[in-house]
Amino acid sequence: MSAAYRIPFNKPTLTGCETDYITQAVASGQISGDGSFTRRCHAILEQETGARKALLTTSCTHALEMAALLLNLGPEDEVIVPSFTFVSTVNAFALRGARPVFADIRPDTLNLDECRLEELITRRTRAIWVVHYAGVGCEMDTIQEIADRYGLVVVEDNAHGLFGAYHGRKLGSLGSLATQSFHETKNITCGEGGALLINDSALVERAEIIREKGTDRSRFFRGQVDKYTWVDIGSSYLPSEVLAAFLYAQLENRESIQARRQEIWQNYQAGLESWAAKNGVSQPVIPKHCEQPYHMYYLLLPDLESRTRLITHLKDRGILAVFHYLPLHLSRMGRLYGGQPGDCPVTEHVSDRLLRLPFFNSLTIADQAEVMAAIHEFHV
Ligand SMILES: *Cc1c(COP(=O)(O)O)cnc(C)c1O
Image 1 (tube, helix red, strand yellow):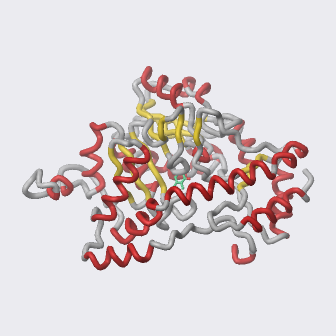
Image 2 (cartoon, rainbow, N blue to C red):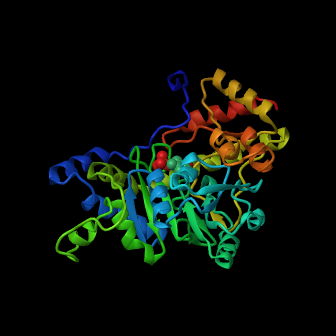
Image 3 (tube, rainbow, N blue to C red):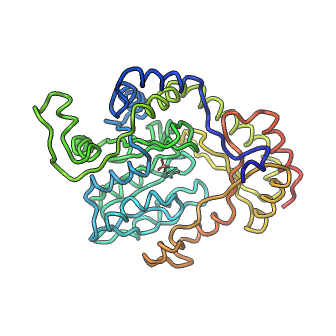
């Protein structure tokens, strides 16, 4: 389907070193997980985010599942989560039987509305799972203060937010746990991959055990026990060295990847400013105290009708623009948890109006200019 588009929505960034490193990993004789490329990725992630401990996983979805296991979430528990997110954020604890309580978002940053958070807390609430939408930090000071007051754990789904910061503190280092995604659509990728970041030291050892099929294999490899055995529940969440080698090539080139993304983002923001103002379209809002990692560029059209027309207008010119997320509280699963129209009015409104523009590192200046020219021809 995307072959029909001259300017696609996304293409994975390649740095040129990926296949060399994969060859090295294969030549080293260890292609299963937790070898030297994995260790090098962990070191970069810990250094960049300030997280106490980073563990590569096979996806962000799996890192989120690990978080639910680590927090012992179960059928008696409720977790507050924005309705405006990817399904994995919620599936992770729904799989353990815990119930999602859907929160609405702020109309400016599209992040969980911290002013409406407290009214969702019940006797059963155990955790607040936040999503830093587009890598712009949630109001973590307020959220953490509420969490502390009620004895709740905060988990960051930081799939969009690697290298972002809030009041100078790196995203991924703020919750007890945080998760990263290295899916093809993210800034740094290995096709499918992720990481769990652990900031609460008390959770580190068990995280290693859960990731290694419920065994103390990591302790065995460090020489801390003389044999390894089954000590807890767990699964297989570690990626092979082949993937870690690919990922290392990307992480090593993080500065140039991020610099190019900043350029593309700023071009859109400046190039569309006058058009947006004339047409009643909103551009992304980045609060002064947030440093964003330039994950995506989106526009908020006035309504569903104008967004549909703009998608068609761009499609006719060979340009693919896409939207997400359908409100989770109104999905078939969300309804089973009691979701009703009107529960999260901002989410419902934004979901009809948001449009993401082509955004990838190899997007040429000429192609980006063409996208913007096509938008300038469009009248809301
Ligand atoms: C991409 C994404 C995920 C899932 O990431 P995978 O690595 O594909 O499992 C989860 N949450 C958010 C907010 C995402 O954008």
